[in-house]
Length: 443
Ligand SMILES: Cc1ncc(COP(=O)(O)O)c(C=O)c1O
Image 1 (cartoon, rainbow, N blue to C red):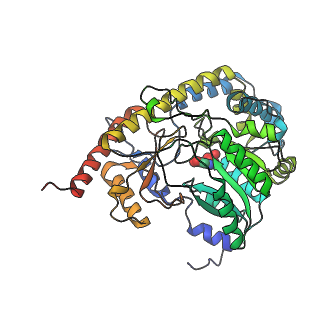
Image 2 (image 1 turned 30 degrees about the vertical axis):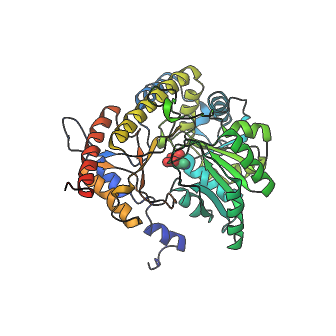
């Protein structure tokens, strides 16, 4: 495509490349949402990682904060670009109690506008343009733009064995050695390793023992290890009677924050945001936690253009200081999340569709490869559109997850109302049955 005479090179590229390939179709689907009475033929957008399960409960508590409290003086003025001290304290208390299960120093925390900005800022401050971030595949497609557009960091999709029958990663350090050699051969430098746990899209987690080994390897090789726990509290109750049998010998989810507290290395970092566990993606709050105080200071000094509105910080701070509310919120959320997962996977089992047993996240990662007309990106896009046009279910397109295996799709199970799940599954069932009839016609 030709360069715009009015824009920079990056400006031209950005004008021509949408943030996500499914945005337009997503907006179209949102204009035609399913409603049992008013629009029974409507759509079910299950592509965007949104969590609507407990919004009513959260909304009520937030409205109480704004109704019953005067806005404090500091809210209208400039504050620390890394986050107001009282907000950082509230977050440290929240992370310590609910995720890390150990004390957290508020000085090790810095905020910016959503995890997107945190990923961008961290990459910009840790890596030079042309250096490489390694990300086990399949993974969040937008990492590519977050680390690439402004920081100029390259993405290397680390191909793990394509076995989606396990809910925990078996991580082989040999893969990191191999990636390092390949990256160096290509003239770049392996600067960052990004893990997501629970993962997007598989819902898998990293075992504590593996995290320890990976952290040691990274520290020895001067590679920055960042664990993104944006789905850290979107955990499934795997003791549920309908799930128990799918998990052999599961280990406990241990937050990387706990290991960081013990190891206190300048090469270990943690990302979080309120977009998923709390379902408030529109609030745009993400955070970096690191014991690398140079990084935190750089974040503060460079971060004003990414900072979070003080009003939002204040509202969230009041919410996060109410641990009684949070305890009840997470109990309800994890129950509803587990129920949504059970309902959706029961539907898949009935249809004979394989999926990756998940430990957490908002997703089910499922294998529809038998319905691909061809095992290519074009074949995947065709099937994705066919599902949408025939069922109204908009799954996440496969593009950008970086995995070599074709035909696996992500469904976001928290983006539609639980009562609508059965209707969506009924439509999917009809679609799959029709496909199966075409593939194996009766003689
Ligand atoms: C792994 C991961 N990181 C970051 C983000 C972006 O989060 P935010 O909305 O807080 O920018 C997402 C959103 O889907 C995600 O799945």
